Length: 147
Image (cartoon, rainbow, N blue to C red):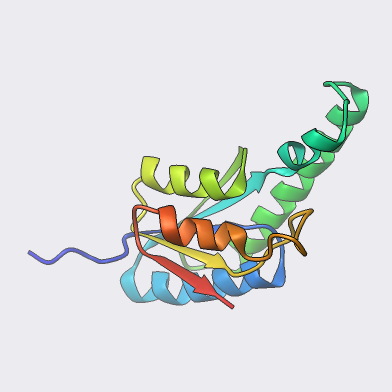
């Protein structure tokens, strides 16, 4: 009995052009293998900002969180529209993007991660591609990096 290679495909997205390209590549694979797709948006900005601010949970940080969450929801909805004939589940997590992606894919038994090579992180110029590089080296399943 042969196993379908990619029954579950995880596509981390952040709204960047590279993550949208990853959705396109993931769609093609999902159509070929009749796979389910999980779209994952990660709220990581609070951890990135933490060393630079002394703000505790307050109205301001709650407002930023709510706006970031609303943006994430819009990114997920827009990406799901690009996968009209595919079974799609959307997820939003809070944490370090690289670690959250690898942990989430393992915990939820994904067979493939399709990830953009660059994203919209606050420190993009300094750590360009570090999330995808981390995922390639630490994921427990194959990873496709889309340029």
